[in-house]
Length: 112
Image (tube, rainbow, N blue to C red):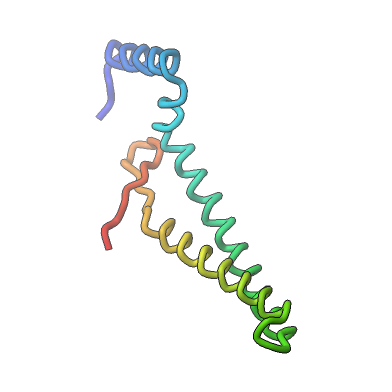
């Protein structure tokens, strides 16, 4: 549904006043920034997953006892794997949706 020129002018005025009054809140309501943040977080978690897997394998190969450095490295890799996996699952639950008409995508949570 398109807006009339008067309605569009009013909406632009509301956006400008909100940005002038509280720029932090206005930035937090920006769906494009939220979408970028989500993809950045997914990318970091994916890299962390592969780094954690590599560190776990290298640490396990270097482990020579229960209290060796290789064991500690392997535990660090497992912790990184766990964080990355949980972050990927959490980011996967947020599904971007487009409301049509070329508007910005909005993010919504999908219940599991």
